[in-house]
Length: 120
Image (tube, rainbow, N blue to C red; front, side, top):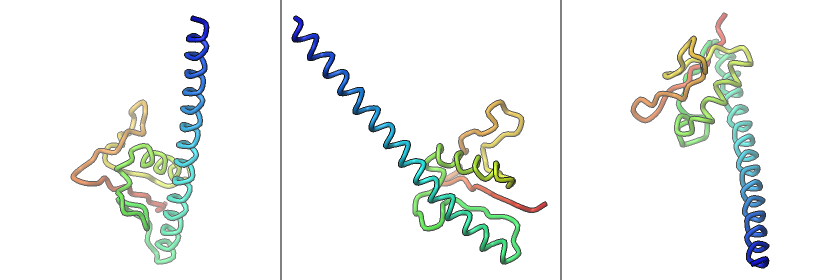
């Protein structure tokens, strides 16, 4: 009996440690990918600003094939980042005055477009 309990406790502890490690790695990967995406979007915004434009509407991050709205968490994280930087952020599914205020993007057809504008 004691050996069975010890084996069960050891197995549970190892499984929990593996899960914690996997969760930490997943979070680290997400943050790294978000940082890369933000840098690419900022570079594109600066290029558009130099050309005299005041908004950037996109469905995918530059040099990424997959649509940004395929990962709702990443979509909202990027939208929040640019909102905190002082940009006006719009997309289908974002409702003003809602408690959460940052809803998942409403998927119309294949993608939802994120619009970032910096016009005063």
